[in-house]
Image (cartoon, rainbow, N blue to C red; front, side, top):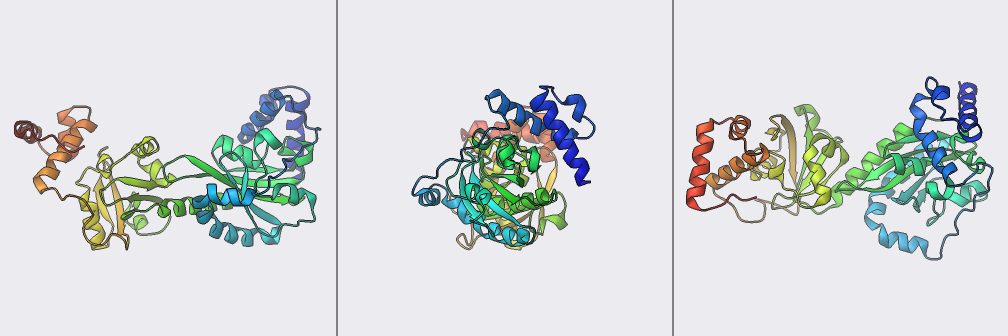
Length: 371
């Protein structure tokens, strides 16, 4: 009930902000999933802040919108359509949308924002700093700090001055895995709507997919553990260039294929992910149906591959003969198995003798396998 929630918030604030307690015993039953809020409160206290202090919202420099456009062009292009849709959805309950960069500075707003309300005006400005270091505990600072969707209501904010806000936030991850910003829904003196956490997270996924697809690519793939899911929208999304290099992936794909974590640090090839010649992925796209593809782990994943209009026909780059592709695959399996030929042979479905024979022939020819 709202009254019970308000009591929980007030009790937690007293335990952490006034009594100096850890709040562990106070909150372990009623507020168990809110420990991240108390961590934020404690960080604010350690910085010498007090809840009753006034907040000096940063002045927005002239030209902030133009600089945001230049610095965050890709993020804004991907986010604006979804922000408009989201703003329409929450308008009846008097919420609006805010987009920030990875530092918590506002780069875009959307929705019915009452500019005559000072509480709305001070936060809904491109260029204003809404990070934890600036305004204390909020959905914006929490989403960027915790890197998962959050919901905050009224007194869960650190400062008394921000206790008029209720907000939901979700971080946004870019095509190579780094956090590029966050999406926020905020209402002023409104009823609690914790379901907005789910809504804003859904919109964040749509923006991440748009960012993934915005990277120039020759092949896009939907990945799933079953064939029915691979044929639909949403879920894991992965894009390759004409040479088979991975150019972008959404968070669902990174969760599904842990090797994609390497994308943040540099180049990654489809051959590092799939235990089959990478050009077969382009051939599968030509057939237009999901296909079961082996992974180096021994698992199989369903892939629905689609070529882009800019990459008709075979992928660009040199075409290797089938035997060379097979040798590449064998060498890669051995590397993935840490040199264990038996394990590599099991992954490939070959006999150990066949793998040894092919490795010996490659050495004798003096032609190293393509990495």
